[in-house]
Length: 520
Image 1 (cartoon, rainbow, N blue to C red):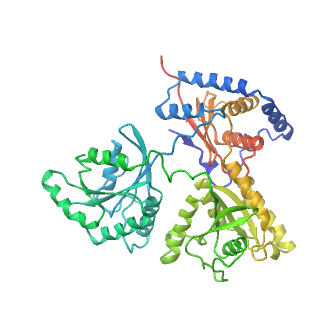
Image 2: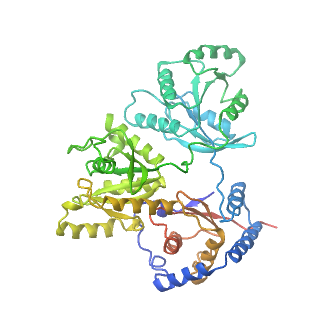
Image 3: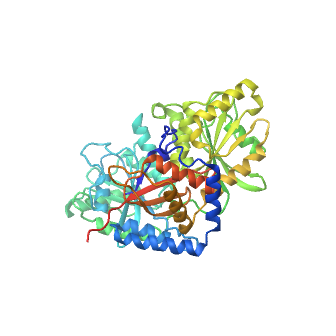
């Protein structure tokens, strides 16, 4: 089980930890360390990493550990990407047995199942396997048209799951047959243009199988009668699913090549649409002093800095999204979905207004999504000296946790300094794609732990056995350790990674795998 430090992932500035947070703040020591790593012979570093990797054979490692290690040790740069697993989403109206089918496919009781509609609310992903092929299974809440309150959020999450899937299982209760709600779901699925497999659940014996015939009326092809509760017919369904799912997901990873996708985020009325219009050189979207003019994400390919970008103007994210209703509610959900499809987010702040909790939540949303980040301070032409002093103090206090994010001072209305946005975007995306060879990473960890070893906790001193970067976009590292590392010590390692390798404009994930020595 990978243990992720919530303080590293959160946008909330961690409280000062006198034992760790001032650890190794000597700039001269950092420069000396960077020089030693630069002069390190690549072959010697890789050989040393290989010996550390071999030493892990003395520890209890599971299949996922071995998969990560095999991927990390392949390739000339020390990292090889595992193919993105295909994604299968399960959707349907409430209480048709979606979570029961998830548990049956997984072969274990993971999803909560209860004989009450609406138990599942969020979309939840699981790793599944059939006939030696692994795939990602996504369970969703019940989809209902004209849902209100939290049910509307559940339905919207199901729509996002379909949008981010390679294929869809549409589950219907064979005892009830096709309902008006099912027909609404069918229209939504057709609009997604995804392969859809119709599942007639709760067919506990062959007597009920003929009832599936009336489901042909939904126009989704042959229905598959089965019983998720008893497992009847599930194997045949999965055989068919393997024929439909691609070998490698077309949606789980951002495609390389083509215009980079930039999401423009911020509170209502901070100038997001004005920024897109100025970048596009035309009135591409409506701009009005009334907050909340934009509701649907608007894609526009613009030429900026000599290259083509896909800019996505999004609706302003308001306070208390879960309490919104109507168009504003769905606009917020579409904004979140647009961020998931983007590669880098430009968070626009209005410098004439104090940095608010709302601004912090938007930045937190970007950090949680793992997207690269650029902060654009808009309306700079309206800033006076007094407000500038307050602004710098607010940035120092409230945004101390994202000092690594490139900062651009612009005026979307006049186009002032808009050209500085391109270098900031390129820097953030380059960092987002950065990978560190395994040998160099372990050399850095060895230097850090030799100079500043982890303190003894409970009579034991945790050691880092091996480190590897398992992916980019964002850079994600896994440390195999003999014990739990204090959050402050992990922040120290993260800070050193930034000081040595930059990573400007991208969040960094540092995960742990605590492993015990194998008993002889």
